Length: 94
Figure 1 (cartoon, one colour):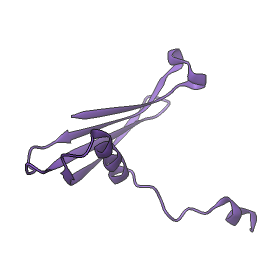
Figure 2 (cartoon, one colour):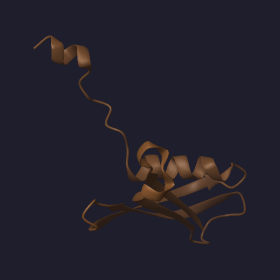
Figure 3 (tube, one colour):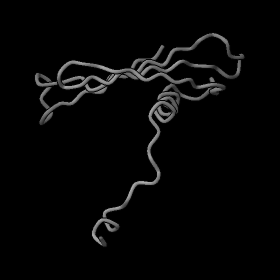
Figure 4 (cartoon, helix red, strand yellow):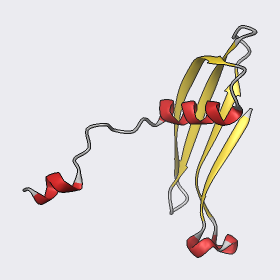
């Protein structure tokens, strides 16, 4: 299993660190020798301490690829970027 923790370090100060999110990527052992299937869980932690979790699945990931690639695919699967966002220039035109 892989675990990724995202922390905010105000002005780079470790003593003020605050965890923003944690993600786990776990192999479910149902893949093939070449490709794995993974369960992904992303937990957001709000400033007030409350949390909410999203889950997703990555299937047929090439086991020969580095773990950092799996983390990138897992993050883009569970929290895809919106492609239709307005640009700054569009806002100036209004």
